[in-house]
Amino acid sequence: MKSFPEKKSLIKLRNGNKIGYSVYGNKKKFPIFYFHGWPGSRCELKSIPLKKKKCFIIALERPGYGISDPISNFKITDWPKIVLEVANKLKIKNFSIIGVSGGAPFALACANTIKSKILKSVAIVCGLAPHHVKGMNKGRVGMLLNYGKKTFISWLLINFLRMSLLNSNLEKNFYRWKNNTPLSKADLKLFTIDKGIKLMENFKEAVKYGTTGVHRDANLYSKDWGFKLKNIKRKIFVWHGDKDLTVPIITNKYYKKVLKNKKIFIKSNEGHFSICYNYMNDIIQQVSE
Image (tube, rainbow, N blue to C red; front, side, top):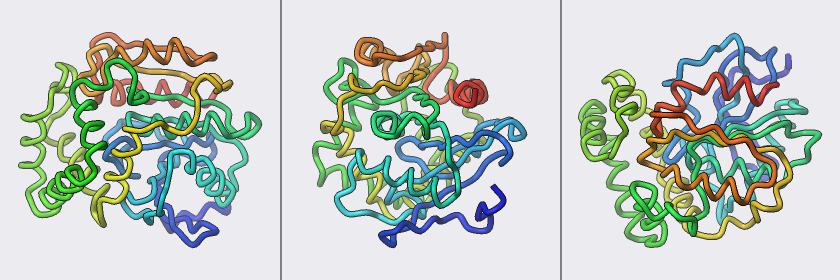
């Protein structure tokens, strides 16, 4: 791992496009690729109390988010090839994956495609399910999928939110978001002003140079993902809080039914954000073993 390019946070792909990333932890530990949520960025883990001496995480930004270049006609099934190319450039031969919320479909696409001798294990945390699954039409995720189907309306809304994040006080943005977002008691307790501002900074970084990635993913979530979950042979660790008001816990019934090789962890009284804050170190340890 001595050749790891520490000074730069961009990887140039063979096609000339660049992918943004951030590194967290100890490079002597087993490497884990982290896939952010929606919206999200390579900075997402800055708000999580990681045990940095015990983990080695490479947080990747999908095309069109943060400092990653947009890629025309990008699909969920294109992501595994990019991950493999990034791993090769970083001289990483074996790795695991954690996909959070909107990063879950991309983690599952990797589980479906990447060979077991390269990909050790996959965890999805408070993950989205396919658009047709019961519960995916409810709450915040239902709103997201609805916007995804209405591309022009979603483009207008996302760009309006971008301008608000770029031009307004982050503290005001946080309170506006908190007041307008259904949150569990655990999430409400979690979001002090300091943690809230870090969340807004993550959202801001996601759209800092444009909304291509955020807009595209909203559309991709509302369509067929391009692969069959029942064909995934790799073991998948599924984590979810039973008080999640963003992605309803009922979606796990689908994962329980369709994934052939899985282990599901439902955490009592945890919300969409608190489960990441309180259990990320356990999940990291799990996919490292």
